[in-house]
Length: 443
Image (cartoon, rainbow, N blue to C red; front, side, top):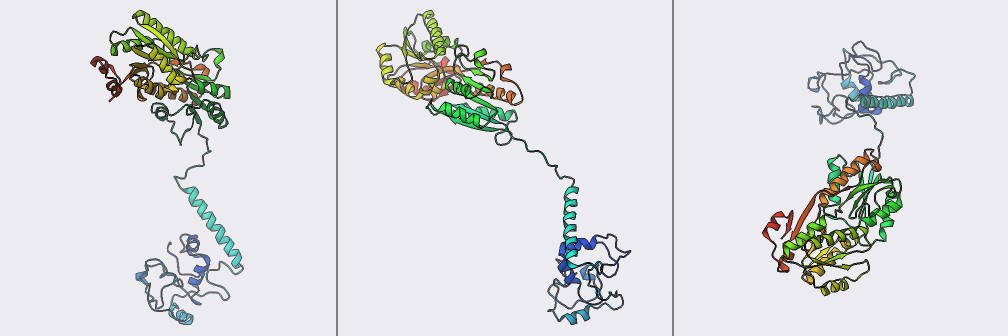
């Protein structure tokens, strides 16, 4: 508190450097406590010296009735026991420097006609004003910002895989879309139940997502039926033209990527010839309900003719018993098998890989998911690269790009994956040059 001239409380004084000093003291101690502190006699004096330099000795216990000794850290705390109020008045009476107080007035009254209730309202209002001034005056006080709603992304697929949704999240994070802060991701999976795709797609539309990432033809079809306005970023196994995913029939809200590249069929047949030297008979397992699988089969047959390999086919449908399917495969006595990829065979990759191992038939697959499930080897699109590109498309759409202005693209990076554990189970040696070419080897 700034230095104060000796005066009666409530009177103006030239020695008061800051007229609000007592008001601050009143805010700290409270009006009633300050009044009790100063009601010590007809005459009084306020000391502003340090407590250890006060010349007038205090012989009563330091408590809330002593203004100086009531402060934290006072050297007067714990002195003699309290005495009667009259004795305290005598001991605290200041002789030479006493300031007389008008009769009928209490110490602390600003003027005679101020009632207690009015003073309390004034003090309360002053306290609120002081707090508001201090808060507003803080140099670092942030201005109120309007709340903005983070956009949402819907993700619709059959199941989560290590190279799909985690890679998509990482790609978005690299572009400053951090889940839980600047973006929200809603995931929905069919888990091998195609009938759930429609329900999940409708759910994402009700959530008012800004964009839907749909993986696989069933998910893409469900998303297209659910909305004509929400942008859809597809990740497809099918040829876009054969599946009707390009042109006017695709809709203005569809873009994305496809892993289908017909030329890869030639490379897969070459891989089969490397692991089975001198092969002359092979079988292709395919889904006749897929237009893209038909294109893939045609390319594979052309490659087989070019290498003088007799290629037969076996169909697999959604409700087909795989034991019957592989009984047909064995009946043809092939030296190797090629499994063409589509949504159906990918969803049933584990039983397919198990059947190929059971009949000890070297098999080449189109995607690494089959090899992770126990298949021998695969050559196809690198999923991690596909989902990184999908993250780029989502980023552009969230920043205002229109799907119709973003053409559907094909995967451009491919990987060779070999499962040595399966090769040992088949007693099939893998050529060393082929192992050196592999992008990933499962031991």
